[in-house]
Length: 470
Ligand SMILES: [Zn+2]
Image (tube, rainbow, N blue to C red; front, side, top):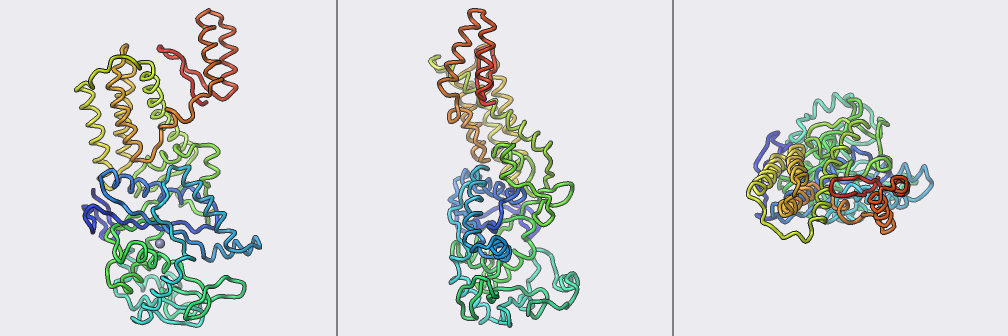
């Protein structure tokens, strides 16, 4: 596989540190509110990275943290007059629900900041000892001037940062340089705090990830990923902390996904132009949202609009319709003597699989991988439409299709079994068939209306009626 590495700004061959194994750390959410579609993009994209590497036979360990102590959480808890644990428990659970609806697997480990305090404190102690951090009146800060490589990932230089922040302006923080950042924030009245050698307080956001990478995966990991907005300052700061504390590189490959834009502006809480996954799930299925996210390359921005989401939903429907039709034909053909898969079909299926894998191997090009899926869908549709559909070919092609969809985390299986029509609908369907056979059209229409009213849709095909959720 080739991966575009933000650190070197080029595509590189992916070679894991330990043969056969891959360690991935992905920055997770701050649990103070519901996630929006922009937050969902890295979840989906890097879930596919994980699945693709696993499908290549690699043993992947995927860690994603949860920030459960932070300014925004404290503010929200104050607004609601509850403890910070109430806020984080609520939105952590909501985050799991939304991720599950999008088909995102849980990480192998999901460390929380408040449970990682001892590791954070010991890393800060080492940074102070080595002269990379200093104690100030309101906490402990990282000294960016002590780390010559600062800015290498983002291309940011300290002088520019100083200009951007208005030079040495008066800050409420008692740090030495504008680019310095807090490792430990001393407790203010009304804020939660944990004991530390510098007084009761809480960790800064950046040190949390450095400490968790070390405790969960070791000093150097294979892939560190997250949204493009985390390159600076978050990932730059993670590198400065980890390299200074461990004297080893933090990650060999850095992957960053592009923004979800609304009218050319990044979807974000602060701009107020966001759509929560929760709200979108009332109008679209989780798989439709996932398909939408995967329809573009992860590094490109994607534009959000209801029209584009509807177009994606239509694309996903072409796939689920194909799965349903093929299953229907196969069910009808059950009992027909099993023939061998034709050489022609075998070739088409192998070509689709080859194109699919090549696309994901090329810096996780999910858009091209979906094009290969549609090649397979077209082939299956044409096989299913033959006067005598070749059952063995259809079964083999469907198996390939479902395998490829599973690597993308797209679940078309529910079309096959899970949410099939209940018995009373099947009974109505049978009665309608009988009415049609008897040319009793009024009765057939009445039964069809009953089925429709129950939320099911009938499609009459040359091989009989199919029923599925409207
Ligand atoms: Zn992080």
